[in-house]
Length: 347
View 1 (cartoon, one colour):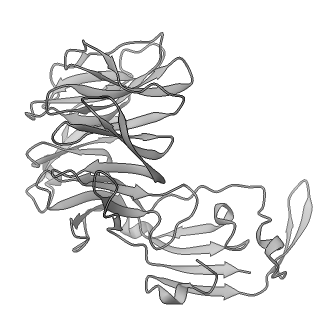
View 2 (cartoon, rainbow, N blue to C red; view 1 turned 180 degrees about the horizontal axis):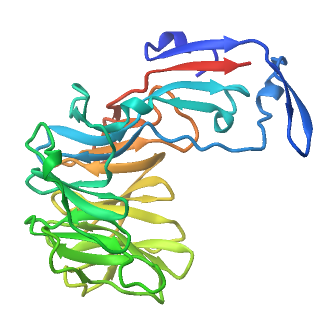
């Protein structure tokens, strides 16, 4: 998208400042920034510092009904490209803090609405869609949901010790798997299982000599997939039964594989590999697809679609840093949500 192409996009407004001259000083140096030069060489010279923007949309979770998607959202109001449009990692990102919260949007992209004035870390719907489990302050909670709103007066805390994240429900809704560093002398986290009321906590994977086991996800056949470090460098995807036995390694490569999630029919497993979304055949163990766009998180629909956050930790615009949906094979990709912000380019 060129400098003057935004007028075609109703979601963005643009203000271009032709010239900015700034004198800056620090205790160690005095330097002069002159951005009046309009040449392309100037646009490629970005300052040394690096700012990684936060995606406005994050943590999508498709409700078991298939009708809507929950997600964390903090609207972005303005991006100020203080060093030109070619320097997004040195821009200033201004968010609407007062609108930060947990939202719902219908599966067709309509009726986006805030349902909680705060965000939910690593959220997970129960199989019947009547509860949501989430982490807060290193502990796991669950909260009832009636299909339209949450009952914030009935939140139940399920864990009380250690650091606990990534809850995932068993297919019958009776248990929750999660990762925790409770009873871990080294502080490493491993996969645990508890009843959905918080009772009977059991660590089912403990490999302190090999590294952490994290990010469990429960399949409809009661197996659990999770991320585990092999050596000290690479994270791979493994599978085991709910007792912690019959461990099977699913990936074997030199990438960081994480966030594994079963499809509803258990035939496919999606995961992120170095920030790229991959889909693996659960029966053959072969990766069927590796999609070209970088992704920060995703979720399956009950009918096999995938909702994901299209974001490369670099550029935010009308459709990057937003929710997208696609078919399992990558077909019918389309944005579900949009960013609506002001763009200021100091050129």
